[in-house]
Length: 169
Image (cartoon, rainbow, N blue to C red; front, side):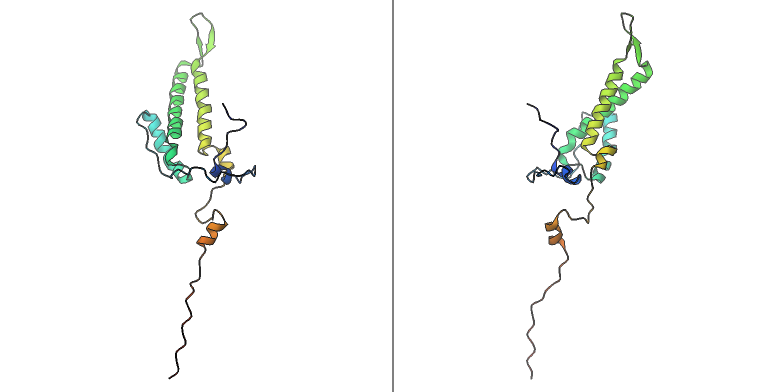
């Protein structure tokens, strides 16, 4: 059974976009720790290089969590597949002659395009495309998340109990 309508956005993304639909947000949504997942061993060399390039970017953007390893691995491996398919396509050309003699588009052309589509979708998940970033409002360190947070972290004046007046001698 599939979803009806668009896939729901994580609450953090909806908040960052200003909750344009004004729908009630899920306050009980799981919150994975903001730590860097381990790079999977199954990635090939080019995919691991892309992993090492993207991790610092995602950490600076504060969007990488312990739960994101598989999605990031898929992005990196798909990027690697696209690069290899593009290199082969460049070498062989976009057209080829089939065994029956017909000129056809190379299957590599479709593979490259499918990889590009998948890379774009996975990049949106992390806010790595210009359109995805334009909808997100990043919070700064000093910007309070809500009024309670601001109240609890506001500077307070220290109040001392009244001191008894000295007795005259």
